[in-house]
Length: 319
Image (tube, rainbow, N blue to C red):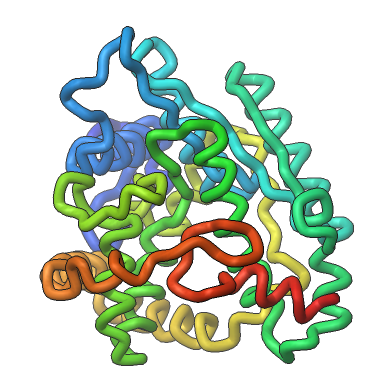
């Protein structure tokens, strides 16, 4: 079938919009949606100037999402002296997995001329995820440990790099899954925190000064479209599942959404749109509830609501 916009053959059909797009118009569509999200979320402050530039740190894993995000942001801001991009890669210590994706990160940042920083669990915490999975003193899924450690390092190094913004490559599928999980679990406070942490315009969030603001400019783009964009642009993405991935519940939600999207195109967009509106309301409702409880972790000094932060508690259990 031909593209809706030209005589070229279509490479993608978006059932949720009815669009059939050729390679060039598909690329244009993805880039337009990402840049529109950057504008809608007010990611570039009105007062930013070449004399007062911003530093944006991208959580660059080497997977398709973070690679596509980095490429599009570079193409958008490469000639804009107001924005500096830095790629930040976290090495978890997973043999045969992260080493290959690190190569993709190096290839991309070298090609684009972007500053690239690499930090590891082993250097920072004295642990490797391969060893954590083998020991597992808390009897938890590997993702539970890894998620805590990863978030801590992203936040810590975003602060050390004096970042004004921390960006991650979460796509539409990721966000729709998280939204549905929070709703099904009845966790209304988590919905409010989710909004404040990374959703909606920066000006509307109840941000805590202790944290670098986060953003997810890919969250309007379905996962398969991100993968297709990476393929068509021959980007050095390492596309494979983590060997320790075991988020069974998220996997169930993923399959549920696949079925709903197939039978009712646009379901993911509707879920995320409604969720963001609801989360914004809940953010106002819970505004200020956490601020008084924030304190410094007794072990590492990071900001937390506990005496000892979750990261340090997990690390102590591994000793």
